[in-house]
Length: 116
Image 1 (cartoon, rainbow, N blue to C red):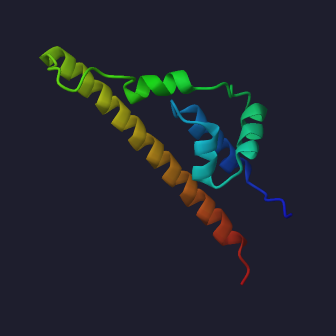
Image 2 (image 1 turned 180 degrees about the vertical axis):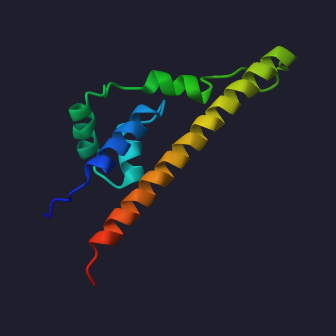
């Protein structure tokens, strides 16, 4: 099996992506970047980033178990819900922008390595 080489910048970006993404798992980030989850885990350990389970933080960002379907929310509750949703959407946008930038850098790197 051929061992892949990843540039240090790619590794640092992957670690940064994991660190800046609340609720993300190693498996999700690794799949998004096209690397094995054990590889990403080793990069995180080398960078000193905690890899403890983040399920509790994910429940917070998902809205964790809202009320019943027929209940009416007060204007204050609606405002809080919309603010939380806005914050989540901004975090998603930031994540997508970071992923796009990593993919651009990777494409540029691998395009330079091709010798046709």
